[in-house]
Image 1 (cartoon, rainbow, N blue to C red):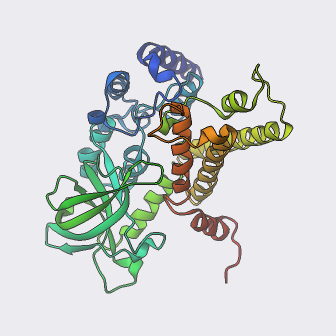
Image 2: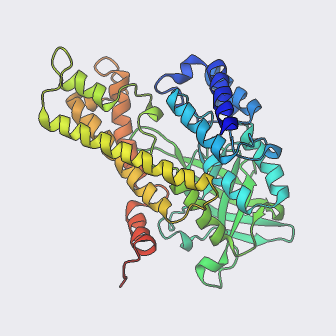
Image 3: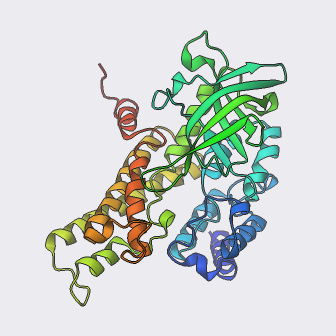
Length: 395
Protein backbone atom coordinates (compact mmCIF):
# COMPACT_ATOMS: atom_id res chain seq x y z
CA UNK A 1 0.00 0.00 0.00
CA UNK A 2 2.87 2.36 0.80
CA UNK A 3 4.33 1.78 -2.67
CA UNK A 4 0.96 2.56 -4.27
CA UNK A 5 0.68 5.80 -2.31
CA UNK A 6 4.17 6.73 -3.46
CA UNK A 7 3.16 6.01 -7.06
CA UNK A 8 0.05 8.20 -6.72
CA UNK A 9 2.10 11.06 -5.35
CA UNK A 10 4.74 10.80 -8.07
CA UNK A 11 2.13 10.37 -10.83
CA UNK A 12 0.22 13.44 -9.65
CA UNK A 13 3.40 15.51 -9.64
CA UNK A 14 4.39 14.31 -13.12
CA UNK A 15 0.94 15.05 -14.54
CA UNK A 16 0.85 18.48 -12.95
CA UNK A 17 4.22 19.33 -14.48
CA UNK A 18 3.80 17.77 -17.92
CA UNK A 19 0.15 18.11 -18.98
CA UNK A 20 -0.37 21.51 -20.70
CA UNK A 21 -3.07 23.66 -19.12
CA UNK A 22 -5.02 23.84 -22.39
CA UNK A 23 -5.45 20.07 -22.39
CA UNK A 24 -7.24 20.23 -19.03
CA UNK A 25 -10.04 22.42 -20.36
CA UNK A 26 -13.33 20.96 -21.59
CA UNK A 27 -12.76 19.57 -25.07
CA UNK A 28 -8.99 19.47 -24.60
CA UNK A 29 -8.86 15.86 -25.77
CA UNK A 30 -11.05 16.36 -28.85
CA UNK A 31 -8.33 15.16 -31.26
CA UNK A 32 -7.07 12.30 -29.07
CA UNK A 33 -8.06 9.73 -31.69
CA UNK A 34 -5.41 11.08 -34.07
CA UNK A 35 -1.77 10.06 -34.20
CA UNK A 36 1.25 12.36 -34.37
CA UNK A 37 0.85 13.31 -38.02
CA UNK A 38 -2.53 14.98 -37.35
CA UNK A 39 -1.62 16.70 -34.07
CA UNK A 40 -0.01 20.05 -33.27
CA UNK A 41 0.60 22.47 -30.42
CA UNK A 42 -0.17 21.36 -26.87
CA UNK A 43 -1.98 18.26 -28.13
CA UNK A 44 1.19 17.01 -29.83
CA UNK A 45 3.32 18.00 -26.84
CA UNK A 46 1.07 16.00 -24.51
CA UNK A 47 1.24 13.00 -26.85
CA UNK A 48 5.04 13.19 -27.03
CA UNK A 49 5.49 13.44 -23.28
CA UNK A 50 3.21 10.48 -22.60
CA UNK A 51 4.91 8.41 -25.31
CA UNK A 52 8.28 9.02 -23.68
CA UNK A 53 6.82 8.13 -20.28
CA UNK A 54 5.11 5.00 -21.64
CA UNK A 55 1.70 6.31 -20.64
CA UNK A 56 0.00 6.14 -24.01
CA UNK A 57 -0.56 2.51 -23.00
CA UNK A 58 0.27 2.57 -19.27
CA UNK A 59 -0.35 -1.11 -18.53
CA UNK A 60 1.24 -2.58 -21.67
CA UNK A 61 4.66 -4.21 -21.26
CA UNK A 62 7.64 -1.87 -21.47
CA UNK A 63 9.24 -3.96 -24.23
CA UNK A 64 6.46 -2.73 -26.57
CA UNK A 65 6.67 0.89 -25.42
CA UNK A 66 4.07 0.65 -22.67
CA UNK A 67 4.38 1.87 -19.11
CA UNK A 68 4.53 -1.55 -17.46
CA UNK A 69 2.21 -0.43 -14.67
CA UNK A 70 0.55 -2.95 -12.40
CA UNK A 71 -3.24 -3.23 -12.35
CA UNK A 72 -3.44 -1.19 -9.15
CA UNK A 73 -1.16 1.52 -10.54
CA UNK A 74 -3.08 1.74 -13.80
CA UNK A 75 -6.43 2.03 -11.99
CA UNK A 76 -4.92 4.71 -9.74
CA UNK A 77 -3.51 6.63 -12.72
CA UNK A 78 -6.87 6.66 -14.51
CA UNK A 79 -8.53 7.94 -11.35
CA UNK A 80 -5.95 10.69 -10.86
CA UNK A 81 -6.26 11.86 -14.47
CA UNK A 82 -10.03 11.97 -14.21
CA UNK A 83 -9.85 13.96 -10.97
CA UNK A 84 -7.40 16.42 -12.55
CA UNK A 85 -9.54 16.66 -15.73
CA UNK A 86 -6.65 15.39 -17.85
CA UNK A 87 -7.55 13.58 -21.10
CA UNK A 88 -5.92 10.38 -22.29
CA UNK A 89 -3.11 11.25 -24.74
CA UNK A 90 -4.42 8.83 -27.38
CA UNK A 91 -7.66 6.99 -28.02
CA UNK A 92 -9.32 5.10 -30.81
CA UNK A 93 -9.19 1.56 -32.10
CA UNK A 94 -5.39 1.29 -32.07
CA UNK A 95 -5.44 1.22 -28.27
CA UNK A 96 -8.88 -0.17 -27.56
CA UNK A 97 -9.20 -2.83 -30.26
CA UNK A 98 -6.24 -4.10 -32.28
CA UNK A 99 -3.68 -3.45 -29.52
CA UNK A 100 -5.39 -5.59 -26.86
CA UNK A 101 -6.14 -8.26 -29.46
CA UNK A 102 -2.48 -8.47 -30.49
CA UNK A 103 -1.38 -8.61 -26.86
CA UNK A 104 -3.69 -11.56 -26.32
CA UNK A 105 -3.58 -13.44 -29.61
CA UNK A 106 -0.62 -12.15 -31.61
CA UNK A 107 2.76 -13.83 -31.96
CA UNK A 108 5.82 -12.27 -30.35
CA UNK A 109 7.02 -11.12 -33.77
CA UNK A 110 3.66 -9.47 -34.49
CA UNK A 111 3.69 -7.69 -31.13
CA UNK A 112 7.21 -6.37 -31.70
CA UNK A 113 6.32 -5.19 -35.20
CA UNK A 114 3.03 -3.43 -34.49
CA UNK A 115 2.65 -2.44 -30.84
CA UNK A 116 5.52 0.12 -30.67
CA UNK A 117 3.87 2.07 -33.48
CA UNK A 118 0.80 2.43 -31.28
CA UNK A 119 2.60 3.28 -28.05
CA UNK A 120 4.68 5.95 -29.82
CA UNK A 121 1.57 7.57 -31.30
CA UNK A 122 2.85 7.04 -34.84
CA UNK A 123 0.52 4.47 -36.41
CA UNK A 124 -3.20 4.90 -36.99
CA UNK A 125 -5.29 1.75 -37.52
CA UNK A 126 -8.70 1.22 -39.10
CA UNK A 127 -11.09 -1.73 -39.07
CA UNK A 128 -12.16 -3.71 -42.14
CA UNK A 129 -15.31 -5.55 -41.02
CA UNK A 130 -18.63 -4.36 -42.49
CA UNK A 131 -19.39 -4.75 -46.19
CA UNK A 132 -22.26 -3.45 -48.36
CA UNK A 133 -24.05 -6.79 -47.93
CA UNK A 134 -22.59 -7.83 -44.58
CA UNK A 135 -23.36 -5.43 -41.75
CA UNK A 136 -25.09 -6.93 -38.74
CA UNK A 137 -24.75 -10.28 -40.51
CA UNK A 138 -20.99 -9.88 -40.51
CA UNK A 139 -20.27 -13.56 -41.12
CA UNK A 140 -21.76 -13.09 -44.59
CA UNK A 141 -18.70 -11.08 -45.69
CA UNK A 142 -17.42 -11.76 -49.21
CA UNK A 143 -14.08 -9.91 -49.45
CA UNK A 144 -11.86 -12.65 -50.84
CA UNK A 145 -8.27 -13.51 -49.93
CA UNK A 146 -6.42 -15.95 -52.19
CA UNK A 147 -3.58 -17.94 -50.64
CA UNK A 148 -0.37 -17.30 -52.60
CA UNK A 149 2.05 -19.18 -50.38
CA UNK A 150 3.75 -16.56 -48.25
CA UNK A 151 1.01 -13.95 -48.76
CA UNK A 152 -2.66 -13.39 -49.60
CA UNK A 153 -4.12 -11.38 -52.49
CA UNK A 154 -7.27 -9.55 -51.40
CA UNK A 155 -10.16 -8.33 -53.56
CA UNK A 156 -13.46 -6.82 -52.47
CA UNK A 157 -14.58 -3.86 -50.38
CA UNK A 158 -15.46 -2.73 -46.87
CA UNK A 159 -17.86 0.02 -45.84
CA UNK A 160 -18.41 2.32 -42.84
CA UNK A 161 -14.66 2.17 -42.22
CA UNK A 162 -14.00 4.72 -39.50
CA UNK A 163 -10.94 6.91 -40.02
CA UNK A 164 -9.76 5.06 -43.13
CA UNK A 165 -8.58 8.35 -44.63
CA UNK A 166 -6.11 8.75 -41.74
CA UNK A 167 -5.09 5.11 -41.32
CA UNK A 168 -1.67 3.61 -41.90
CA UNK A 169 -2.78 -0.02 -41.40
CA UNK A 170 -6.00 -2.01 -41.48
CA UNK A 171 -7.03 -5.11 -39.53
CA UNK A 172 -9.43 -6.98 -41.74
CA UNK A 173 -11.73 -10.00 -41.88
CA UNK A 174 -11.49 -11.80 -45.23
CA UNK A 175 -12.95 -14.97 -46.72
CA UNK A 176 -10.33 -17.62 -47.30
CA UNK A 177 -12.66 -20.60 -47.86
CA UNK A 178 -16.06 -20.12 -49.55
CA UNK A 179 -16.94 -23.82 -49.39
CA UNK A 180 -17.52 -24.26 -45.65
CA UNK A 181 -19.93 -22.85 -43.07
CA UNK A 182 -19.57 -19.10 -43.41
CA UNK A 183 -18.12 -18.53 -39.92
CA UNK A 184 -15.47 -21.20 -40.52
CA UNK A 185 -14.02 -19.80 -43.75
CA UNK A 186 -12.87 -16.41 -42.43
CA UNK A 187 -9.34 -15.22 -41.61
CA UNK A 188 -8.04 -12.16 -39.76
CA UNK A 189 -5.22 -10.30 -41.53
CA UNK A 190 -3.28 -7.03 -41.27
CA UNK A 191 -1.96 -4.97 -44.18
CA UNK A 192 -0.75 -1.40 -44.85
CA UNK A 193 -3.16 1.13 -46.33
CA UNK A 194 -0.31 2.35 -48.54
CA UNK A 195 -0.69 -0.71 -50.78
CA UNK A 196 -1.42 0.60 -54.33
CA UNK A 197 -4.50 -1.62 -54.54
CA UNK A 198 -6.27 0.24 -51.70
CA UNK A 199 -8.64 3.08 -52.69
CA UNK A 200 -11.11 5.14 -50.64
CA UNK A 201 -14.50 6.76 -51.17
CA UNK A 202 -15.56 9.07 -48.27
CA UNK A 203 -19.12 8.83 -46.92
CA UNK A 204 -20.68 12.12 -45.77
CA UNK A 205 -23.15 11.91 -42.87
CA UNK A 206 -26.17 14.04 -42.04
CA UNK A 207 -24.06 15.60 -39.28
CA UNK A 208 -21.91 17.19 -41.99
CA UNK A 209 -18.90 15.09 -41.11
CA UNK A 210 -17.22 12.43 -43.21
CA UNK A 211 -15.56 10.10 -40.69
CA UNK A 212 -16.35 6.95 -42.68
CA UNK A 213 -15.18 5.57 -46.01
CA UNK A 214 -15.94 2.73 -48.34
CA UNK A 215 -12.61 1.01 -48.98
CA UNK A 216 -11.91 -0.95 -52.17
CA UNK A 217 -9.27 -3.68 -52.54
CA UNK A 218 -7.82 -4.49 -55.95
CA UNK A 219 -5.18 -7.23 -55.63
CA UNK A 220 -4.01 -5.97 -52.23
CA UNK A 221 -1.11 -7.95 -50.73
CA UNK A 222 -1.23 -9.13 -47.11
CA UNK A 223 1.78 -11.04 -45.81
CA UNK A 224 1.21 -14.39 -44.11
CA UNK A 225 3.33 -13.08 -41.23
CA UNK A 226 0.44 -10.69 -40.54
CA UNK A 227 -2.19 -13.41 -40.23
CA UNK A 228 -3.56 -13.30 -36.66
CA UNK A 229 -4.44 -16.79 -35.49
CA UNK A 230 -4.85 -19.60 -38.02
CA UNK A 231 -6.22 -19.60 -41.54
CA UNK A 232 -10.04 -19.95 -41.53
CA UNK A 233 -10.20 -19.32 -37.76
CA UNK A 234 -10.42 -15.55 -37.94
CA UNK A 235 -14.04 -15.46 -36.79
CA UNK A 236 -12.88 -16.25 -33.26
CA UNK A 237 -10.29 -13.45 -33.40
CA UNK A 238 -12.83 -11.07 -34.91
CA UNK A 239 -15.40 -11.73 -32.19
CA UNK A 240 -12.79 -11.24 -29.50
CA UNK A 241 -11.84 -7.88 -30.96
CA UNK A 242 -15.52 -6.88 -31.10
CA UNK A 243 -15.76 -7.39 -27.34
CA UNK A 244 -12.95 -4.86 -26.91
CA UNK A 245 -14.67 -2.50 -29.35
CA UNK A 246 -18.08 -2.67 -27.71
CA UNK A 247 -16.64 -1.86 -24.31
CA UNK A 248 -15.17 1.36 -25.78
CA UNK A 249 -18.18 2.66 -27.75
CA UNK A 250 -20.74 4.90 -26.11
CA UNK A 251 -19.15 8.32 -25.83
CA UNK A 252 -18.07 10.92 -28.33
CA UNK A 253 -20.76 13.56 -28.20
CA UNK A 254 -19.55 16.83 -26.74
CA UNK A 255 -15.75 16.53 -26.89
CA UNK A 256 -15.77 15.30 -30.50
CA UNK A 257 -17.59 18.47 -31.60
CA UNK A 258 -15.87 20.96 -29.29
CA UNK A 259 -18.94 21.67 -27.15
CA UNK A 260 -17.95 23.52 -23.98
CA UNK A 261 -21.36 23.39 -22.26
CA UNK A 262 -22.79 20.69 -20.05
CA UNK A 263 -26.52 19.96 -19.94
CA UNK A 264 -26.80 21.98 -16.72
CA UNK A 265 -24.95 24.91 -18.32
CA UNK A 266 -27.32 24.83 -21.28
CA UNK A 267 -30.39 24.63 -19.04
CA UNK A 268 -29.28 27.70 -17.07
CA UNK A 269 -28.49 29.66 -20.24
CA UNK A 270 -31.52 28.79 -22.37
CA UNK A 271 -34.18 27.85 -19.82
CA UNK A 272 -33.17 29.75 -16.70
CA UNK A 273 -34.12 33.23 -15.48
CA UNK A 274 -31.79 36.25 -15.54
CA UNK A 275 -29.80 34.68 -12.70
CA UNK A 276 -29.61 31.27 -14.34
CA UNK A 277 -32.11 29.71 -11.93
CA UNK A 278 -34.17 26.84 -13.39
CA UNK A 279 -37.79 26.92 -12.22
CA UNK A 280 -39.23 24.26 -14.55
CA UNK A 281 -39.75 21.19 -12.28
CA UNK A 282 -40.01 18.78 -15.22
CA UNK A 283 -36.71 19.97 -16.68
CA UNK A 284 -35.01 19.68 -13.29
CA UNK A 285 -36.35 16.13 -12.99
CA UNK A 286 -35.02 15.23 -16.47
CA UNK A 287 -31.61 16.70 -15.70
CA UNK A 288 -31.43 14.82 -12.40
CA UNK A 289 -32.46 11.55 -14.02
CA UNK A 290 -29.86 11.98 -16.78
CA UNK A 291 -27.17 12.73 -14.20
CA UNK A 292 -28.08 9.66 -12.15
CA UNK A 293 -28.05 7.45 -15.25
CA UNK A 294 -24.68 8.86 -16.31
CA UNK A 295 -23.13 8.33 -12.89
CA UNK A 296 -24.55 4.80 -12.62
CA UNK A 297 -23.18 3.91 -16.05
CA UNK A 298 -19.77 5.38 -15.18
CA UNK A 299 -19.59 3.27 -12.01
CA UNK A 300 -20.67 0.12 -13.86
CA UNK A 301 -18.06 0.78 -16.56
CA UNK A 302 -15.41 1.31 -13.89
CA UNK A 303 -16.29 -1.96 -12.17
CA UNK A 304 -16.03 -3.93 -15.41
CA UNK A 305 -12.84 -2.07 -16.36
CA UNK A 306 -11.30 -2.85 -12.97
CA UNK A 307 -12.17 -6.52 -13.43
CA UNK A 308 -10.57 -6.48 -16.88
CA UNK A 309 -7.42 -4.85 -15.51
CA UNK A 310 -7.33 -7.55 -12.85
CA UNK A 311 -7.08 -10.21 -15.54
CA UNK A 312 -10.75 -11.03 -16.05
CA UNK A 313 -11.40 -11.34 -19.79
CA UNK A 314 -14.17 -8.97 -20.96
CA UNK A 315 -17.05 -11.07 -22.21
CA UNK A 316 -20.66 -10.58 -23.15
CA UNK A 317 -21.02 -7.78 -20.59
CA UNK A 318 -19.40 -5.57 -23.24
CA UNK A 319 -22.68 -5.79 -25.19
CA UNK A 320 -24.43 -4.27 -22.17
CA UNK A 321 -21.90 -1.43 -22.02
CA UNK A 322 -22.14 -0.83 -25.74
CA UNK A 323 -25.95 -0.78 -25.74
CA UNK A 324 -26.47 1.39 -22.70
CA UNK A 325 -23.57 3.73 -23.42
CA UNK A 326 -24.61 4.52 -26.99
CA UNK A 327 -28.28 4.95 -26.03
CA UNK A 328 -27.34 7.19 -23.08
CA UNK A 329 -25.11 9.36 -25.27
CA UNK A 330 -27.86 9.67 -27.88
CA UNK A 331 -30.41 10.66 -25.20
CA UNK A 332 -28.01 13.28 -23.79
CA UNK A 333 -27.53 14.86 -27.22
CA UNK A 334 -31.28 14.91 -27.81
CA UNK A 335 -31.81 16.60 -24.45
CA UNK A 336 -29.20 19.22 -25.28
CA UNK A 337 -30.88 20.34 -28.52
CA UNK A 338 -34.28 20.20 -26.84
CA UNK A 339 -33.07 22.56 -24.09
CA UNK A 340 -31.63 24.95 -26.68
CA UNK A 341 -34.88 25.09 -28.62
CA UNK A 342 -34.49 26.75 -32.05
CA UNK A 343 -30.83 27.51 -31.22
CA UNK A 344 -30.21 23.78 -31.06
CA UNK A 345 -30.67 23.53 -34.82
CA UNK A 346 -27.51 25.38 -35.79
CA UNK A 347 -26.14 25.30 -39.32
CA UNK A 348 -22.44 25.29 -40.10
CA UNK A 349 -22.99 27.92 -42.81
CA UNK A 350 -24.69 30.35 -40.39
CA UNK A 351 -22.11 31.64 -37.95
CA UNK A 352 -23.93 34.92 -37.39
CA UNK A 353 -27.00 33.42 -35.74
CA UNK A 354 -25.53 30.32 -34.08
CA UNK A 355 -22.61 29.98 -31.66
CA UNK A 356 -19.92 27.28 -31.82
CA UNK A 357 -21.67 25.40 -29.03
CA UNK A 358 -25.01 25.55 -30.82
CA UNK A 359 -23.65 24.32 -34.13
CA UNK A 360 -21.59 21.66 -32.35
CA UNK A 361 -24.64 20.44 -30.44
CA UNK A 362 -26.56 20.00 -33.67
CA UNK A 363 -23.74 17.99 -35.21
CA UNK A 364 -23.41 15.87 -32.06
CA UNK A 365 -27.17 15.23 -32.00
CA UNK A 366 -27.07 13.96 -35.57
CA UNK A 367 -23.84 11.99 -35.10
CA UNK A 368 -24.92 10.10 -31.96
CA UNK A 369 -27.63 8.35 -33.96
CA UNK A 370 -24.79 6.39 -35.58
CA UNK A 371 -23.50 5.17 -32.21
CA UNK A 372 -26.54 2.90 -31.87
CA UNK A 373 -25.46 1.17 -35.10
CA UNK A 374 -21.65 1.22 -35.02
CA UNK A 375 -19.99 -1.83 -33.48
CA UNK A 376 -23.21 -3.83 -33.65
CA UNK A 377 -26.64 -2.17 -33.57
CA UNK A 378 -28.67 -1.89 -30.36
CA UNK A 379 -31.03 -4.68 -31.46
CA UNK A 380 -28.10 -7.08 -31.91
CA UNK A 381 -26.73 -6.15 -28.48
CA UNK A 382 -30.11 -6.77 -26.85
CA UNK A 383 -30.25 -10.18 -28.54
CA UNK A 384 -26.77 -11.04 -27.17
CA UNK A 385 -27.73 -9.84 -23.69
CA UNK A 386 -30.91 -11.91 -23.67
CA UNK A 387 -29.17 -15.08 -24.86
CA UNK A 388 -25.72 -14.90 -23.29
CA UNK A 389 -26.25 -12.96 -20.06
CA UNK A 390 -29.91 -13.48 -19.10
CA UNK A 391 -30.03 -16.95 -20.74
CA UNK A 392 -33.59 -16.39 -21.91
CA UNK A 393 -35.20 -19.08 -24.09
CA UNK A 394 -35.16 -18.56 -27.85
CA UNK A 395 -37.58 -19.58 -30.51
